[in-house]
Length: 89
Image (cartoon, rainbow, N blue to C red):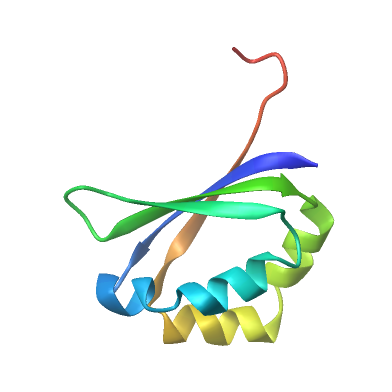
């Protein structure tokens, strides 16, 4: 289990922020919790996931449900995924 950061642009911030309940339900499949950060000047977000099961995350993100959710919540590709580097500090 590892922390993961995901960053991407959104087409409409209000629409994206309104999808919080859906995200919480979806993300609970592969992590113990998450926090959302909004860019101060752009329609971009970063999400920090705690205790991620990487295989479960990959499966969830590749699902048809996730694809439909991305469209509904105006997620714009690319989606950047960062994982913690052990000993990198």
